[in-house]
Image 1: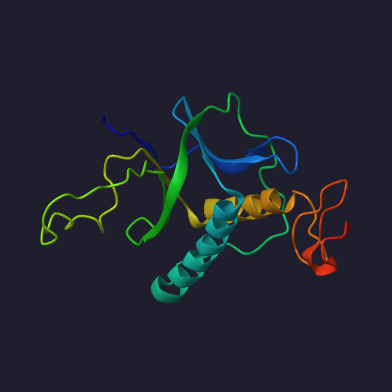
Image 2: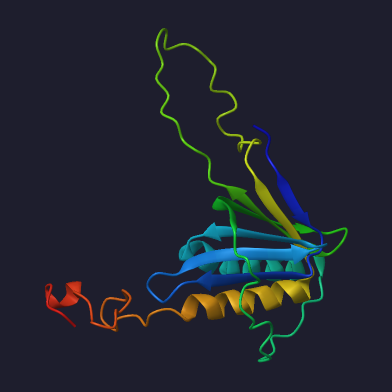
Length: 192
């Protein structure tokens, strides 16, 4: 089976968004450009970490390469919902980040989660067939996006808003509160 690389260099729009009510949301990265629309599903923690690591990448690019970063402005950027239809191309397993010094752009690559098949080895233990285990699987679908530092900042701000728009956290344990409350471990299992 062949893999697809969905490349948007640069996209017309690249955002993180959700579908569903709080507590049941599905998170997506969505890229649009050139008449194409690609949506990939991922976990809330992946969106949160992506925003955090992109901020670190921009700071490091400024420090090491002297890249001019846009100021942090309280301007609300793209606050529109995801474009429809939201058809999941694949579920993200790995996220990769890079800074291209030549073009002064950030490259984000979302790689599909690989299907892990249990390996059963029969025979000698001395077989050296595991040489390429450290290499990422090249047969997995990918979404590759190239953003300017300004577009990266806008993505970071929206991603943080999307993550924080869910259920409020319990002030004691930090777990999300359901409308009916939750069993707080800090209260020995009593409803809070």
